[in-house]
Length: 455
Picture 1: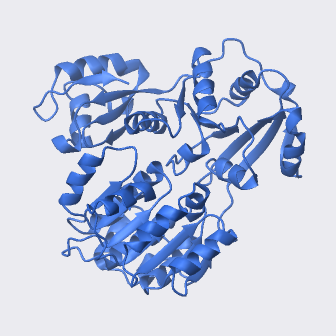
Picture 2: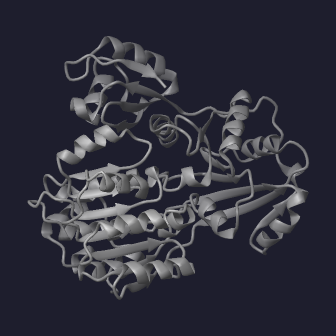
Picture 3: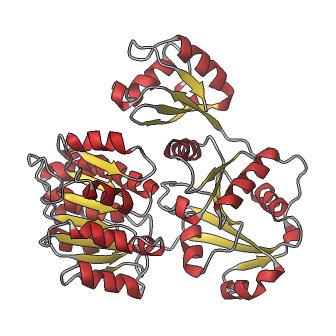
């Protein structure tokens, strides 16, 4: 399909109007290539990198086929991580605004089983989740897939890397054989081809890598002899990024690096798989709303993070292979912005680093980095937590109104507002955070008093 207009597809007027309203002016390459086949009911195996618009590609397809009046699970999306599942569900809810009462539910590990059970009893049209938790609900018969007509595997290559293949096969055993199956993957290893043959029926292959715009990323490599952490701080002081993700290979090192950076007056937060869900939420909210400038993470934890503008990526540890390296640095330089990726290595890693040497990558002397005494990295905002959320019928407009009304803040000092079931997070300019907390604690939101504290 040559045209990139959504109006060329067999979509309802309501959906087209919603797409226009939410800013979907034209299709991305993966959408224009895959959507005609998806809408035609074909099984599709699609190769597309993160940020290519793949969620909307399968999201528009499944929402077009949804029977809203039929309150049964009709679509299941399997994701490798909780963060990606949350991101997918969030985008689907925006796409689903063209119709009333479309219920989208996330089922992921790390969250309490009981509340999920309660939500399932109320029914859902679309389930988004991780294989392990989905399987647990199926085994306990709290989730029924007999009405499923579309199964989607998002970032299938990553699910294979994480050892989910057995759980995926068990989940699929619960699904009807007569269904449409979509498989999205950033890479096409042999295992993906084998998976497609097992799960799909005459799948149509769609690859858009050749026509997608390549991220503009400057790649710099530094050999470190002394303290690796100090060298990374020198990278920060040289380039002064607005925000940065630092990748470590282990959970223990992730915690250690974050703690050492904090002692050096660099605002850093750690993210890894051993953290409780509420702690992960706190970290992700703060990083995405500019209340923290540095996120130190493992590869698995950072998979699927929805950070639209990331100034820098640092490989504190060398990744396990070129493919992981590409995934890491691909988070910066999106949407036409220029990104920067810096990698640290020691002379003991000369053999590994040889794989990365080419004419495009810059191998520079670590002594060229700026050493700045008393260097600090403080965030623009601080996060205010309100002990009330969706269950209390709180909306972003209610919170904004309370802050700009009784609390007396200017709209320009209020940043991103994230609302969860029981809590709301508000980014406040750090110069006004104490005043905002004080006034909101004494005041009311929607005629109710809520506990308010600084994260």
